[in-house]
Image (cartoon, rainbow, N blue to C red):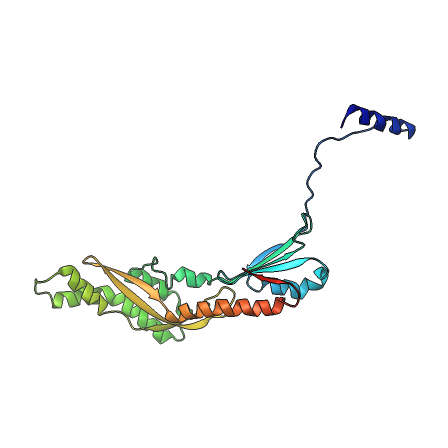
Amino acid sequence: MDEYLKGKIAEKALEMGLNTVLILEGDAPEQHNNKCIEISGNIDSPSRFVKVRGDQFKDCDRHCLVDVENGKIELVINPQSSTDKHTIVGKIEKSKKFKALGINDNNKAYSPDDLHRKLKLMRSYFPDHSSHASICKELKNLNAKIQREIEDHDDERGNVSLKFKQTVESNIPKEFVMELPIIEGESPVALTMAINLRAVGTNTIQCFLESMDAADLIEETFKKRIEEEIGLLQEWVVIIEH
């Protein structure tokens, strides 16, 4: 502010009987909304928000971004506002228990003993106690069983690594069923599981959990749940798929 304008302000202040005038210069502080809404949760978070508070924001600008491939829905209210913009994000994800087990994850390898200890503590995820006891017993005895078979057929000829590999592959435990939520926040489903074995060298066995049921269900469920949520939101907000 130049000196002339400051002088004019001072003259006007004197006319009004003011003894002190405080002139502030520089940019004004940015405005912030301390009560803005930022929610991130399960895939149904946007639709639940609209159900409960939709009337409160029915006259506001809004849109909904949908990423089908990554299972993400983002509801944005007052997108152009710097003070009243609200964002509610819903994301569909594999359940924590499913990811922790490393199902269909080629980077998650167990030794037979480690997998035995893991499953031993998960009896409640099996449809019955007998199937749980059976797979735990197979895993517990797997190393010893393979070693006995190798010794019984050892004629000191041939490739030791190949013999170990062939013996391991012939002892893959039978399939079993576990009841797990595959999607975070969703109910458990029955999944047929297999334990794949890999021979490493001449004495190491790696176990991998695999479920074709889960692979199919995850793809189907992602698509189905996104479509369900779009159906609940599309009458209230413009849907933008990307």
